[in-house]
Length: 292
Length: 335
Image (tube, each protein chain N blue to C red):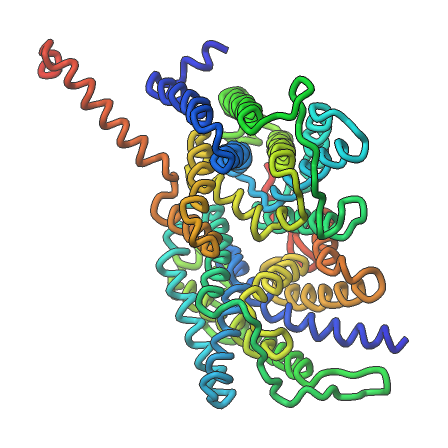
């Protein structure tokens, strides 16, 4: 029983990480209807920037966090302006392929810049686990991440529902053309959406750096899992991203503990494939009809 | 059948004949250099892989990040059949290709109904699952793979590299011919319609899912064939060769950079993507960086692929050539 509870706790901890990055994917897809495969590597860049500022440059944590958010946002906005936007005008399939290429490029270029060795990022509040009972414990860093995830979700929700920009984003997500006729500045919304996505990825990167060691390959696996989580929950649906993230974390942890740890990565995909084949719009997604 | 070739320009026919002659003659001249022969064989295998991806993306608008999985299924099926069951190579090859076709068909049933984002993700998933099974099973030799794969026999003797290359080239030509027939037929026209506008195509009575499924299964079989040829050339296979991040991505690059929806583009793209790592041997650690950059740059600056500017150049040359021919007769000025 205590094993099960421990599994649930670590599953939710991992799920919270997936959920933050899944939110980044989902806000991009929900608003602009584009899937950016490279978000995992944007997350990795955020992580490395956080590491550079916090550990190498020994800046205070909050400064390191803000700097890494700003730089990550600038990087993604430059990529958007220089590459993604012109390609989207040609075809959204091409954009998807481009982001796959971009992901591979960023990952391997980062390896050339930062090297292949893994760096450790000290945990913010120490690395002694908090004992709940004798056999059940949780790392302080994981608690922080769960807290950050909750704050981000609430902040994002308020932003989307209460601010003018958020409402404009919702209208773009419903019908971009009609929204622009109503006076919504589409390219401004695009920039804001990308900025939010980059900020989310970067926050996730800095806060999860103590849990995963800082390597260039971390973005590939975590980013892919987060994309799976976003798709599972219902692509473009923020609540779905959270649900998908937590669900995926639980499935992985439970599967690895009770079935086989060698196949840990397979469970996520098997579950994804089952969901896509049974309910292609995701768990909470609304069905889009594209039949005759 | 003759009608079909009539649509091909004389210029293209000349280029194809020259290309085939070069593909036969250059390796025959260099047959003593094992290193170069291996490169030629790999390039031929890449052409099969790249053409399969080109067919999938360029003609049916689908995407697959699971091609390396089928490549692996082909390699492992044929090797296990030959090594463990003593099946002759040709039968093992056919069995592997048929198996890949069937797996592609079964997985394609639900997969082809998804849009390209979900399709990309679920095919990456299928690839990862195949990789994990290969890497963790006893019968595939686990992570250390299978070594000492028997050489292919030719009239009771082991095939040398040149013979193996010519066999591979024969498969390449057969595959390209099948692709050519496929895209210049009723199926090809239906695919063009689907790629243009899926809903309109369905409204015209085209069974969209059937055609997508067909192409998905055929490209899976092509990857399987490439896998068989790869395994019996290198004679050592390992799960690492069939991952999403390396191989599937490489195949994607091959299919795209030449020019999507153009068989020649697929071939040229595969050759370029295949030759690059050989040319940049000292920079092998940059390989994937370069592939990633290639995809981004090509799609950003020439979305029609590398062949398109070449075609434009040839068009201009032809025009110049024609004008010169006509000028003495004075017809050029009258018009």
